[in-house]
Image (cartoon, rainbow, N blue to C red; front, side):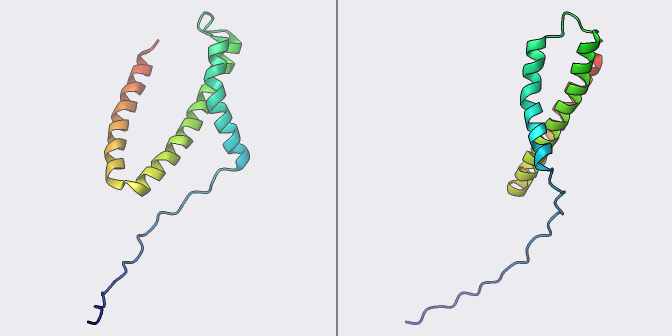
Length: 112
């Protein structure tokens, strides 16, 4: 009995989105270190009893902005990996995150 030949066709590869330029290793190390160290620094310093001292403002405002930036880069990398693996599920998760982050943003804007 002769073996049957299977017809195998190959699909063209999907069009890929151009990857952004990767961060330099120094910038990656700085953002990772700041992401881990800044909440600990704020916890140790505890600016809540003296909220408007100059040192508090210099520590919290720029430090918080850099911390949020490092969170953004980390989340962007995680979302890119999830999109590559689970495109349909990622869309649903991003819609839910948009609503949740919007609610957090509105709540933060209400704080005097």
